[in-house]
Length: 114
Length: 110
Image (cartoon, rainbow over all chains, first blue to last red; front, top):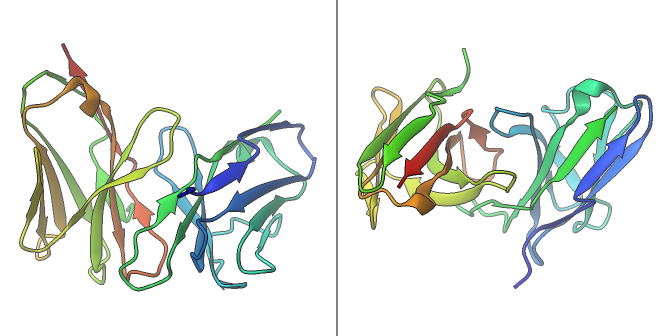
């Protein structure tokens, strides 16, 4: 079946602009996670949804970052007033939502802020 | 101190060699442990879970020492296709965010 998909695969924007990154989880997966991976680092947690609600947003670096999942499926990560330090690969993962379920990652969106 | 620490490498080994990676974690409440593999410019993919009794999957063996908060991965008979970054991953319970190490880069050379 289809895996996690993310669009766009690459996004180049200018400092100060607004961007939206989209994640389509595996069908039927209730848990959805956003991570950010900078060069030479492992992925770092941003926010986790269980269904439509954000169960844990403790990883969001500041209030420029926001994410939604209005219907419990597709999620959008929104970044306002982008800064050069936001440049990274943004990874989305989903799982069935049970205590031992594996998280499956999408291919990521590579964001470059000029 | 980082929550999950790994030697970043790179480890450059010849084909057929045996190579071992180590990882330590700081959160004693961690309950689940994994090794993920990440190829260049690709997403992480689960290689194997790590169990307290140790587990093996073909050429790959994972060990966990809860007392020392230490995880290892052993790769026997290395193949060129094993070249990748290996990420040590923990979480406190199954349905919570994963905590990743920085990864250990492996290059297997012909």
